[in-house]
Length: 369
Image 1 (tube, rainbow, N blue to C red):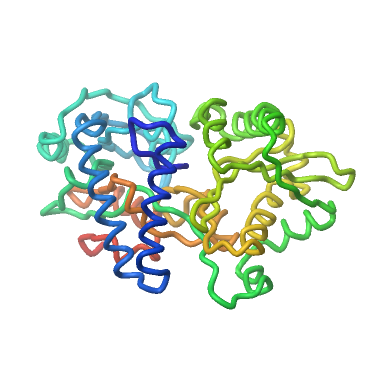
Image 2 (image 1 turned 60 degrees about the vertical axis):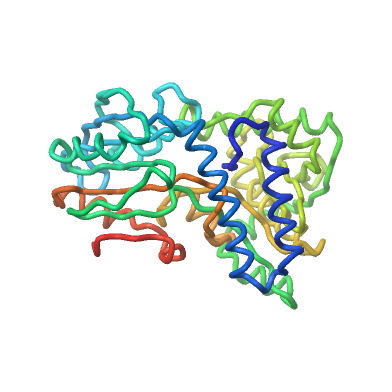
């Protein structure tokens, strides 16, 4: 998942963010972490405030009832959010939390309307006596800390990265990968790779690899990027890292861009969405060869995009195994509040079963759950 400055095209937004990040890196150097983060935080706050006045003004309100995924007990949840929370929104953040809260993502949904951001706390408080747990995803400027019950507050999304260290060897990078089975599979298949910047290869990748894989794996609960969106990214310092089988046929790949020493992984795919090719290590090859290419070309970071902040999230676990670590993205304006106003036992069991990442603990606050 990529973070955009809303209202701009994906490539333009990505270019602006990468450009500002690059200027700060050149000004302060990689070692002066504190100064660099202060500047990134400053620009991120400007972006958050802009979003508050434009895209984040109105929040959607829902009440959901179902069986808790943590213990199978009846759970009544209030969900409030703005970006990606409409029932027909292709980003479908609402669906993600249905899947996270309830068994088989099955829940009855009561649409309670919308509210403007100055009213968000009032409407959240009004749900407090009606539900076991409340999840609020909202702009940081409209967020607050509850004064009762059990709660957690932190970034709604985190960025997964690998930072190469000065003097580090490739063998040391490989040791951080907990992917022995997948690495063995791609070596048995004798997979190799090459880079392409040809438009024809992009269109083949989009239609024959990216679309089949994402639609087969995630069905209707994912955001499918349009061909024009990704072509825009491809034409702005982008390339396709193609995975080749033993017969030198292209069987998979990923779309990447490079800005100021950072390789950004945007989307990946496998020929015809074939799960047999996935088992043979083609998808693993995208990660392995992408990381290796970045290391061998002197880049300082591999950026695998955004993930939810839950340590047991499937995508987070997968990227952890490749050596990616979470870091806070100052460009991401949303925070996530998880609150059980009455400290209901069914809610506390769910919160304990779904801990937030310890690596970003210094960016989180809680009531001492």
